Length: 580
Image (cartoon, rainbow, N blue to C red; front, side, top):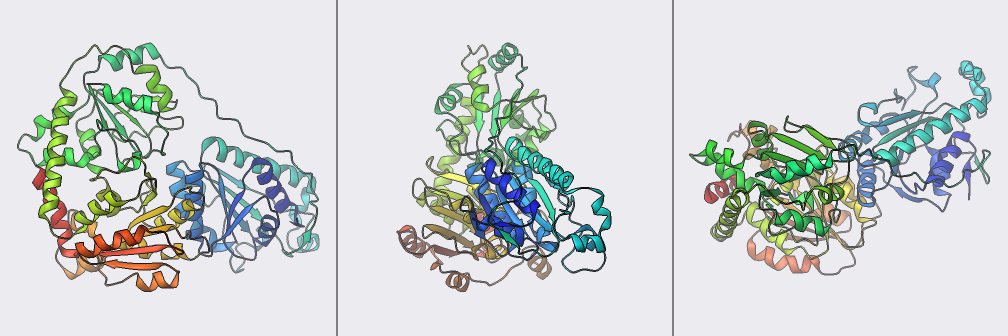
């Protein structure tokens, strides 16, 4: 075992060890050498080398997302850390405990013209829940400090050590208890590569953070009464970790005749009584001559939400226009007023909440659920009929791929078109679905999936579009790809989602600056990164390729499916016309 001879590096590493932060993703550099040496020479830590900092941060985020515990990502000084920012923002809005560690130059080196030097202190503060700016050790490189930073010597090394210990402790407390990203910035002066076999600071005892205590000041009798007396209740579930809601709770909600429970693919909730495709309910209403009447029939008296952010833009638009009398959000941490009608934030977990209020005698009776169940059955039959009519396209491909995913897989969805198409088709309840919906960006889908796969007991499938895949192709530049990692790349040669948005034009400018049409293939990327490569350009090739794609192999596999760029949007929009 070996440590850097710099006290601040020792302090951070010993704190991480004592608190059980053991997964460290490292991007190479010189200024972070004291930490790299200390982490990699200590067998307690699992260290991962990812060259591209943006990919490294999303890799760490995927790991933290899967494990539901803090994971650290470490970089050198300068612009390196700025490449962490997209993943930091995603972690902030998705409540993922990502610990960002940035090595920094001494304060007297900043803004004097040195290379790889920027103003790093608090640079992530808008999207982290704590920023710890450590002080430079005055016992290390003392002659240099005397020459260039004499003002630092106003404090003793003991005072610096005490301050740094306190700041690290605060940052880790927030990461563990708030499930939030934090930033620890540490200035180091050269020499950076000195090593010692024993730390010069006192070792720390193992410390576990207790679960955050929650206040329970609700009037449960009144809440239960409101629930029982509401004849039109809607439960809307956003991003939700797999297997977090108990079957007993799901069954109680499914049995309530006055409750519509809308899920999304990212909700990881399944029951035949639930409504899995929100847009397939709302889109026909939008096209109906009785639009206002039907939306009034769908308007809930009580809206109850839990989970993370919602994918469907249609349900957001509906609830903002046809607001419920009450909106309760169930979450131990925060409540977003997504629909501008939030009336209660109930700070306990959903399992406990539903056990407290569901099961009371239902005093209100209505046709609310049965009416919309008939609508659901209609669109499901029409969807099956539509699939038999349409040619090879994105819509048909998503149906085939989602039906064909082997049971138990971990599935990562890229954003934009991919996650929206996935909402239109039911997923097997054994699948565990993830997607970066905090900021909904396409920038780190591949890296997140690779990071998440590291500790997955089951194989991982990344379902992605072409722009997401090519944008984050550096996410495959690492040594941690498992042979059971699979990528389905639906390549429609551009940003197909822009063809269904307002403003679509058949012009060169639209194709260049919105759709960004291209003729790229993933074949050579697959070969470069050691993937077995398969391609399908029609339905027969897709049916043939799928069985081979999921077969056990010694290398990861990529299946590239080419679909017609100028036809996909017509078929998708035609689906909503057909079911209407």
